[in-house]
Length: 359
Image (cartoon, rainbow, N blue to C red; front, side, top):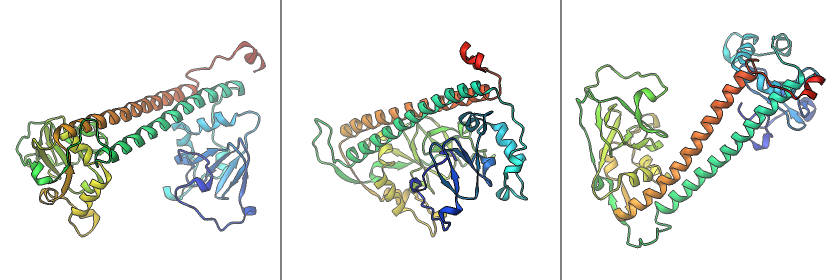
């Protein structure tokens, strides 16, 4: 829904069609095609070139009163999406359909064609900036993955470090922290992307019990992991002191392992695969990695000074990723606010005198 119209061969999940070309609908550049069953979720796209779509779609051809690019942005606003839902027919949401006859009855307020064109140009400029930023983010992530693969395996060594790497059990490097009863400490959550954060910063509703007496204390420098999802890479190094659900296991590094190095190591795919191998349970929903199983996993690590040097490099790569992620978030928020203003008439576009006269 976020990508609009794309070539079918570009889809990761290949879709075969039994329909002949004659049974498909022709789409020309500037047309808008929408999925009748999912238009209320924003499933539509503006065609940038000619092609064919399934007859499950409706193809809209704009007249001289509306600019297609403007319409494609208007269709993404919350108010218009709500109208698409309201005008759709069906007993349940998975059966809702927006037929063209109903679509054509939806009331919208639009400016003149010249102002529509300017609004479309402005918002398209924001989309171009977002596209560049997302490409930069993908590059930053790939660079970080390459660094992890080289530095965490010893494939590439940092200058001035040439000592041998040692094979150790995680149990020789970490002890388990099982401290309960610290109910006055703040409630924290351990997330895959954001790390250890205050529970109120998590969007999901708090469904934890009122009794926190069995919640586990976590301290700065500890690594917490989701006992049932460590095989999915759910772990993080903590910079905070607080308590977490007993569904987490808390481990404390000793002086032979650098915490920041270990946090990166635990995100490395070959390491995550080891967590998967050592997790116990009949089905994936019940797999868990207890501290006993965690402690029996072998790792190959360099000296502590080299660990710190590797962690510094990977921290820098992660900071670069986070900077671009923050940029994208700001651009998306600013674009959303601009759409709300421009597409509702709260903020008007000033046309040059020559264009205003033609309008």
